Length: 470
Image 1 (tube, rainbow, N blue to C red):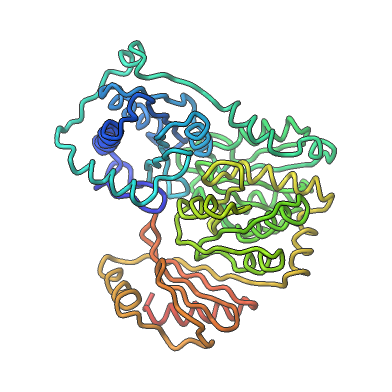
Image 2: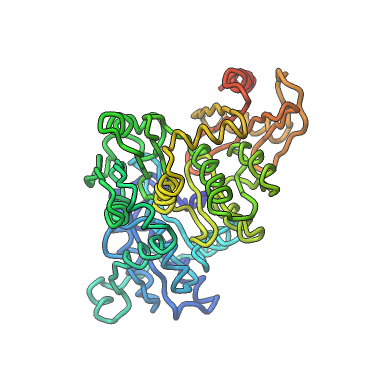
């Protein structure tokens, strides 16, 4: 029942996400660490605010302890990027985060991190699944929690300060202090408030928070920062004349933004703005990395800067690997995750948020003004996104038509070429594109289309929708 997708293992609480499965996974990873000879350095574990997250972390820790592997447990709910940072800084081979990120509240899950603080790649997760299949002693052996603490096999820590200090050292805090910015935060009932508020208030920003309490149901909404879920933040920014509204998903590795005019900035826009800022204003040089579903406006920028834009499959592990290989300035995805050269090798909504605040401060411009500058220089581009639920039979049908037979509908624009790197992506001669793929984190079919005009993007999506009977 334990299968890894693009964002770790996720399952419905009480169905796949059970104490037994959590401990089987912990035992499998323990066995892997022993075979690799890295068990002596131990493992760090963190958890978010989801139902059973803390307990799941402790259950896993008790299994590592029973195997003689020290489990360092972060004893307060924490952002996923903090765990990745800790793995990187302390040169551990493995870390574990209990989270289902932006999934609905009925889900929980586990993300595995490997050396350098990066998401476990496909090879690693396949190996873990093999070790899972070899776990036969069930229930899995565990050490009583307090006994493990007394034996030094479980240690509780809270390393937030070293993570925050790392971000503070990477941005121009003095420039932010001089602006006296008014900022609204929406952690979406997740784990980012303490981190964001600490940094921003240190920089003398006027900070207000909505949706900051602990709620395992996330206020009845999906803990994903998008145009629909950030209505409250949008209204707050407008009513209180804020310079920016910042939101993060449930475990704070993704970001959502409302600009000074109350407009929701798509994650694509955020990537475009930050690449523009880092190259044009900070003088950085280097390429950019995006996944197949992320805006080609980044390609336009890279070309204008004399750089490359690299395309990779969905899954941040592909982005971080390509960034390292090419020394890219920034890498990200249209779902709201990004990172910057010199920071962790994974998504960090907190660092991205602070970098946007620095951008406003350094440029002396409003966020809406900077966006208009980008559009004036590189033109407009629009994306249509659609998601569809399906039955198992329907998935098999779509897979056969699209990925086995490789059939395509009669499309209204001339095709340049088609890629099956990750799902099906059609590149049009006019520079537009369409991507259709199965989600790696939820039972959904996702269709993205980007064109110079929104009505053209919608038209192409409709054609594909009808073709696949979605």
